[in-house]
Image 1 (tube, rainbow, N blue to C red):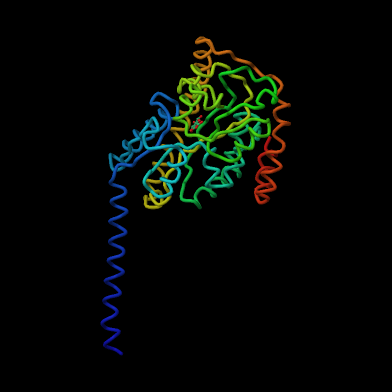
Image 2 (cartoon, helix red, strand yellow; image 1 turned 135 degrees about the horizontal axis):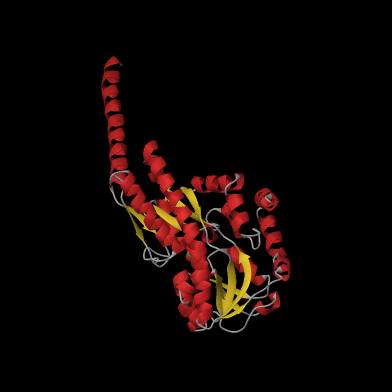
Length: 334
Ligand code: BDP
């Protein structure tokens, strides 16, 4: 008996020590390796410039201990795939739109409800408060840590056929949406047919008539050249969806408190820059596409569109009764 204990104890210690060493090596290896950052946008886009500033800042502040490279232009894959890759750890950080995130993390769907935010400032106030924390917590549970919030303006409809003035105009239209059932319901509530599709496929799909149009903010409409193939832009502004600067949770947890502080403040600084650039780019993109001949239809009264979205809310609450309080919490923020 005594003998057995003598043999087992050192073995146990050895196994424990080996496990610790392996964990340390793994953590060391992760930290030493260059981080891979996913981004869907062109290099001069506000998101991309924010991410570039982030990488420069963490490298500088850690004296080169942490290094990162952002892969722009969606070269690391589509957004739904990239969200999975971050959860698995093959993508270290990214700026994700919360639209496609809802398929994986249902609580984040609340920000994808049409007209949930009154405007961009309202969205900022909501995210800076307890609702923002609840969303971050839900994301962390699924392996994604949100470090800062980027702007993505308001999304409006555009198509190759005609101006949209009322919800009825969407009837029978084939509209590309981001990958989320909620957006399929949104289009259906106006009698249109939605096709979830990767961002990179939208240009050729409009051009070849697979879809009649899509919906997005001014900078994405412009940077993708969708305006060349879908020349009617109507300001429905039905979605105001935030984007998060996110990092893989295992990587985040492996960082020292000091490095976490550096990384977090670099992400926040990058968001400050991005929001400033966002406002400038939104104006510049609008002016550019209008000068290029886009027919812009300004919708002053959005009430008919808001009303048309009621079934989307009803179905959402019916399917997600646990999220009703979160929806109400957003609506209650002034
Ligand atoms: C842009 C978002 C980007 C989305 C894209 C889309 O910034 O994250 O992938 O829309 O429509 O506005 O897919």
